[in-house]
Length: 211
Image 1: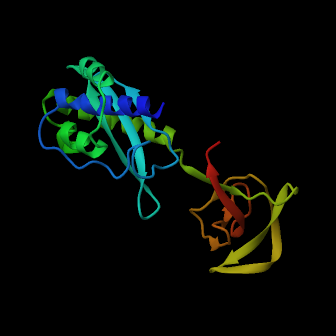
Image 2: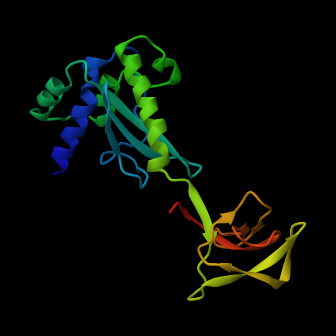
Image 3: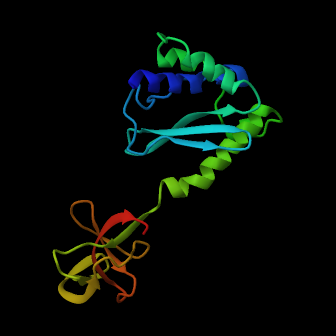
């Protein structure tokens, strides 16, 4: 199973030897299933008008992610290259195959080129822009669960100083507003105002995703 998966990935890499030209760029720090850790986000495959676009993400040192991948143009040889590779036995490293076959990086400048590669790159960037909000929903902060209670206490926040007397009750799950003044909390949480709550009163909120 792993060998078959490897062949499929290498086939997808090698199609670029036929459909692209120019200076190669370095292999990414991770390739799913082959080298380096990838993020928890799955690889994405999107078929467009001009080609197949493959995306995956490698973790960055600062806790963020970097987008990687390649695009295979429909305008030349993809099926033939994949068929040849799937019939072969591979001994070369993935980095060597990448260096030999992935011949250009998709940049905004590349997307402006009046060429098949330029149009393929332009489509790739458009696919990425359109799908990023779907693949990576923006985090939404909500009033944190408090045991079995349906509300949790809110405290006044005045000039950065948190009050000690309960000022209101915040419904668990209510959306928090981090554009207003906040105060730190533990475990990665934050104290913030919540939608429908009184101004200047904060409660503990935790980060989730849009519902």
